Picture 1 (cartoon, helix red, strand yellow):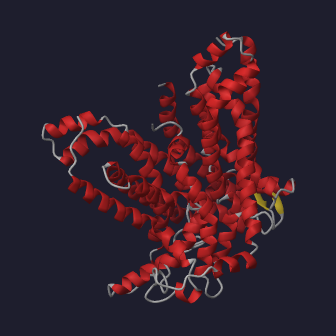
Picture 2 (cartoon, one colour):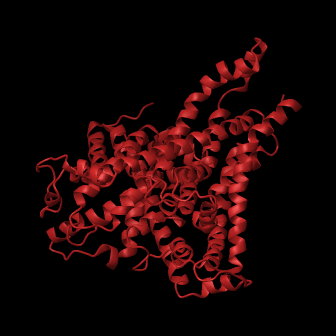
Picture 3 (spheres, helix red, strand yellow):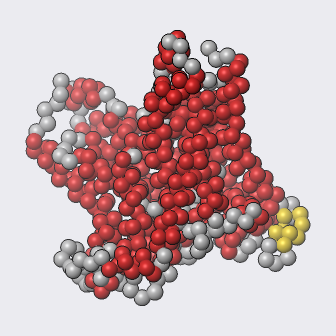
Length: 276
Length: 288
C-alpha cells in the first residue's frame, strides 16, 4: 500500500530541498557568474548578482596570459593515461579474482585496499628522491605512473564488484554450446563487462583530475595540470577575482559534467562495496 | 570447477597488479623507515649517519608537534560532525517525495567534483576575504564587523571549506543506505502511532549505523591527509598546521628528511589504525 502524500507536504519538501540545494551549489554558481563580470564588477559593493554587463573577456585573458591550454592538456593526458593504464593492469587481475577465486582472493583484495590507505605524505620524500633519480620530476609520465598506482586499488575493486555480478552459468552455457575461450571473452563477457568498465573509467578520471597532493608536489611549470595552474592564483596581483573565476570554471566544468553521470559509481567506488 | 590450468593462468593475470602495488608499498616505505633512523639533511651535509630513535623523540618533543595534533583532531573531528549530522538530515530530506528530486541531488553533489585547489581559492577570496568577500558583505548587511576568516577564525574556515567538499559524499552514501530501508517497517510503525522522532531514533538510525561508520572511517582516512586546502589558503599559519602539513614542511621546505620521515612513520601508523577498522567492515561484507 503506497502512502498517500498530500500535495501540500510535497510542496513543502520541494521548497526546502531546493533552497538547501541552491545554497550548497551557490559557491559554484557564484564562481560561474563572477567569471562573466569585469574585475571592477566582481568586487562591486553591494555585490552584483545577475544585472551586470556579461563579458567573455576573462576567458580570453586567462587563456592568453597563462598558457591555459598547456595545463588543460596536461590534465587530460595525466587523468586519461593513468586511468587507461590502470584499467589495462586491473582488468585481468579483477577478472581472475572474480571468476577463478581462491582462498587468498579476499586477502589480496583487502591488502590492495590497504595500500590505498597509505598516507601520501609518509612517502613524499622517497618518491621525490626516486623522481629525481629517474628524471621524472615535472614530467607527465611520472605523474601518470604515480596516479595510476594510487588509484589502482580502487580500479581493481570496482571492476571486481562489477565482474562478480556476471553470472558464471552464462559462461558455462556458452562453453557447452562450443564457444572457445576467445569467443567467450569477446562475445559473452566483454559486452556484459563494458558498462562496469566504463563506470570505473569515469570515476577514476574524476579522481585523477582532482588529485592535489602529488600534482602539487611533483610538478612545476612543464607538466603541471589544472590543479597546479589554479594553485598559482594563491598569490594574487591586483584585481583577479573575475580571472580566478574564469580559470576555475574552466578547470571544473568538464569534471562537473562527468561527475553528474557518475553518482551511482561514486558510492560503489569509494565505499568498496561496504554500502549497498 | 577451476582447473589447475586456469588457476595458474589466473595467478599470471593477477601478477602485474600485485607486483606493482607491492613495489609501490614496499620501496618507499622501506626508504622512509631507513631515513627516519638517520640524520639526513640533503642541503646541509647530506646523510650524516645513524641516529637511532633520535628523530622519533625529536619529532614529538618539538614545539610544533602538539599544536599540529590538535589542529588535525579539530579539523577531522569538526568536519566529521558537520558532514555526518547534516548528511543524515539531507539524506532524509532527499528521500522525501518532491518535484525535481534529480536536479536537487545534482546541486547537492556538485561540490564533490570541484578540485580542492579551486574550492579552497574560491572560498578564500570570494567568500572569506574580509573586504571583498561575500560573507563580509553579509556581515555588514547585518551591521556586524566583517571577520578576517582565515586569520581570526582559521580552523573554522578550513573546517567550513572541507565540510563543503565532503558533505556531498556523506549525503550520497547515507541516501543510498536510506533507500535500502524496508518502507513497510516504517509504515507499520507509523500506523502504530510512533511519532516521527521515535521512528527516526529506533528504525532509521539503527539501519544507518553501518553506513555512518563507513562514512566516518573513509572520510577520516582522506581528511587526515588533506593538503591542498591548507597549501593554498594559510600555508599552515594561524594554527592550521596539521600533522600532514608539518611533515610536508619538515621534508620539503626545511629539508630535514630524517625528522620528517619519523613523522611520516607516525602518520602511517595512525592511518593504519583507522584502516584496520574499515577493513574489518569491508571484509565482513565480502563474505556476505
